[in-house]
Length: 580
Image (cartoon, rainbow, N blue to C red; front, side):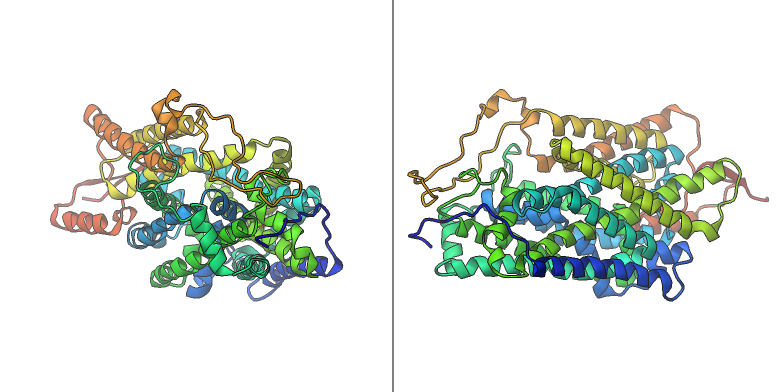
């Protein structure tokens, strides 16, 4: 291949074996939902529908935690990142390794002990109703938008590169996923995650295998070309304005991981399906090698594709518009020669999207039921009918599915929505993590401080996310062996402004925004809480010690055992008088 002109085809062909593979995958996903709808206890209680009656084993739980956030965006985007910027991005998984013990021993015990359907119930018990509503509304909107983008992303790539109609893709993913996740509950979501995760791996290994067959020298050539192209370079610069460095990736990775697994509804809801907290912890640790295998395999596929297109970059050649489309473009370019392989690739991309969307829809239904429907019943003096909880859950799941599909169609006309939603995801995750950390790690925090810190950090993070930023040039690409090309080594021409002309904070790497959001939320919340307490005469409430992280909870319990009992105990939102 090194001395030949690379031929890039423009025709796509999806044969009947490809459609058969896609149909089988979608049919099995729907069938799993039907099975769990009509088998066993038929999902009659909230514990069964949203928490699988706390009966999920370690291996399956760790697998489904890995799949929940490795969406089609990760599958297509991570390979494109490694292709265009290099493998340094994988340093972010340091956060997975270092963040796991923090989640396991600081955040998880609080939620597991309190047995909550929604993580935002914690905020009401710790701070008050207003804090809970503000935080859950922000995250509710975010998850809806993000889910719509996850549905839209593979549709965009597959429509542009394989000829599969975008509308068909959105409807297939949306309806199938809404169907099995709403009628089958969390058990159906978890079982299908295992199937879809396996298909994702098969998809990536198929791409790697086909590409290596065409690369003279195989893996040795991949490594050599990656080294020559600077794809293995590591940057230890302490400058926070550099897009990716060891420090921004590792520190940003830790905070990002904590925002997902420490207080995120999607991942925490999965951990609460474990039989015991010990099982949940073991699943967290098992999640590390599983996630690393999947993520590094996807990353390696990007380097393999870089080696394959080493002398004819399809973006520079004008064949595709984005490096996120390199993998689908390769599927059209080479895999159509093997009947069924294109179908495996499309099924893998669908699976990456389905696994994330199903997790999001189930979590959205749990949030809507626990944080809106039940409080509304109580607000108007009615008792919530527990025998209707699954009916409400399924109805809300269908509604959320329709909403997210609508957002996916909207994203087709508003191209900037993808960048906007991913930016908001980073801007909100840090502040929310800071809010939960403030509640679990300090006794002094109160609702005034919590809301002030949260609002301040979200506003500051959004300003940083959407402020003008200098362009970061990608590593050089070659079109030496492209048809009708006389250029030897080429980098796409970009209109690049002098970075020094931008305000310093606007030049910060996006990886620092989540840590800054967390720190701002925590520090502002803590300081305002102290000021408010000093200026007001309101006695601090005596809260349940289980609302705090285990080490602090143990100190509180020990201190209370040594203190004389007061005549009154103040509980948040209520005051109970004890008999003398």
